[in-house]
Image (cartoon, rainbow, N blue to C red; front, top):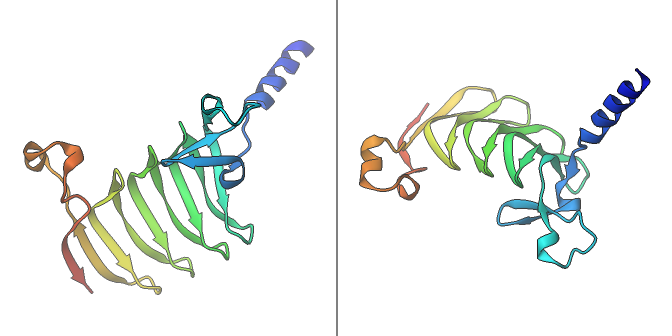
Length: 169
């Protein structure tokens, strides 16, 4: 019984990962975060992409961003803070690009904006708020539909991320 408990404890400790300070122990290459876990950092083949929790710091040592890296790219939900520690934004990444619903915040904690991204481009309806929380701007961003995709390949849509309609309040 003692051996089983010891084995489970070793597996638990060995499999857990401490978040890595990205700019201190990792380096970025074309949007991908790489680690030097081997003895010789001079050889290209010794560099490995990092998987696991990570964060970045402001110069004053307060957290700037925090999330997870998968295959070296930002993945899953990431949260950002300003230099004073106020939450600035939160949203998911996929392969290092913004993907899905994002929310931004004013210094006082009230919502600043909300909207969706698709492969790093703003799409659909985006709503912007003033620092009292009142809606002051609504923008509709172009979404490439089936008709649009028939004209070109999905990766080449030149209209993606462009404002289609804007309305001030």
